[in-house]
Image (cartoon, rainbow, N blue to C red; front, side, top):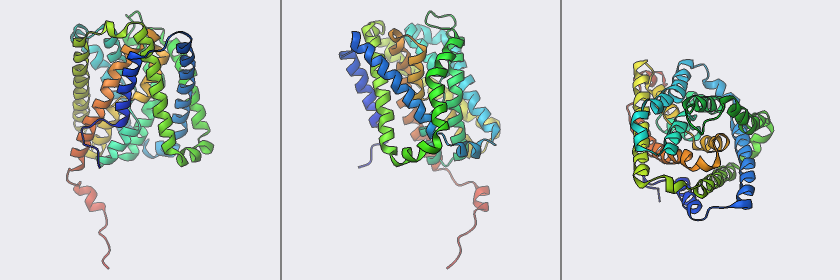
Length: 335
């Protein structure tokens, strides 16, 4: 039986269960320290796999469309951070300090890859450009996210030197990513044969990193610092950010004369944020005591963006075929 359109996927449900488990059964002491080392190894493995999955051919197939890639990069790393920073007078009174920092961190993250490409395919968009933009966003995020975090959080107690942050990112994320990509010719056949198992390892690793992060934050008093009204306000803030980013992506794509196929790629690559990249980056950039509040906005935004994007992809898919493209398609030969 098909899953109802607006029912959360299994991974989202497991994320919720993980947060609940870490809230009621957090780990302490030597167990927590051991789990910390385990998660460091898992993050190394995650980014090694990301690098090994990145197809050089797919990047070159879409890289010539520089206007589209420039637009996606601007939305991801300029428009989003400006939204988070510009809405500060509205957001700060509604949220706790940790949650507002989490919203700013969310705004600095790269785009998703798998869901952006899948949604572009469903919506009959420009697939080569989507693959290139989404993959490039992940790679640029390793450098740009810590820089943006340093700029946006410069006045906060939890901010750190962006150069130091970039050094940690390079060692813990960029190094395994580069190794995975260099070894891709030898690793890729194995990954393709065991794609389902690799996906399960990816998701299980993220769940364990989330459990470790929330455990440390719960022990430090996370839920006592977040009143219910602030949590409800966070849901509304995430919805507002998603609506603004998608609306601006559509407006900018049309304002600059992109085709409908390009518009689809711009919306799904520019207006989404990556949970898979975001949680490990937060683990590297922030202290364990604030990690829960930092990643909570991302964990709310993630299923929200998938649900709205799935609905929007369906609307795009039902549009009439482009007459110019139809004219270029040869008619089927008669028997």
